[in-house]
Amino acid sequence: DVIDHFIYYFERCFELIDSHQYVWIADLSQFSTSDLTPSVAQQAITLFIQHYPERLGKLVIIDSPLIFLGLWKLVKSWLEPESQNKISFVRYKEKDKLFRELFHDNVVQRLNDDLETVRDPTKLASIQGWNTPPLPPSRSPKRKLVSVE
Image (cartoon, rainbow, N blue to C red; front, side):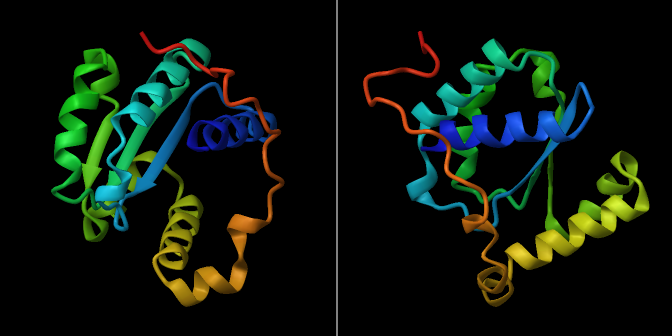
């Protein structure tokens, strides 16, 4: 489940990296109508607000398609203006300028390498990175991770 995935990776990142805030990079080049799930977006936002307040330094959304705009309009209404200002939308070919403002050159290169890998199905299949980490612990379907009002 997506929320379990977020929790696992956030906790793992906080365990490994000594930083109060983070930059989240979301490549939406493969985003489709099947990904339009406002309930998951609302659960994720509630999770971040209740359990990870002030942890988001910046959210960079790369190549958001037109179908994402409807979901974004809904999600944006749930966010405080301060949080809205932390979100940047960029095209893939324009990302380097923003990356250079946010990161050191070695991190920019690593991000570009990673983005190139995840956009190339052959490269992605060869590393099988999605299969490497252990799955988060299972939970009862009745248990709610976050309460959405």
